[in-house]
Length: 126
Image (cartoon, rainbow, N blue to C red; front, side):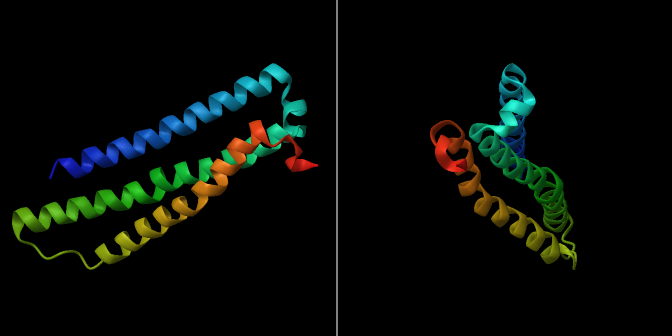
């Protein structure tokens, strides 16, 4: 029973670390070049879109997926240890976590595209 929460913690903190380093990268480059100039550049536009997509993904993990997974883990543990029936809300929790997870999967390709485009596709914006 301890493996699942530990594995999910790795996913959560990996999402946080990725988001935090992405924000650090954006701020470092933007402050070096100048925020207005960077945001007006093709690289700045691309990295900003990728960053917004990454932020949505990060918020999905921490705000939707993880809270619902905590409820499911607690209910499953309760069912196994005390032989109590599963809560009626458990399918709703699973559905919410599933939809947020699928959303993250669908956002990952465009996020990676815009992150890579910031360095390699300067002509993307005109």
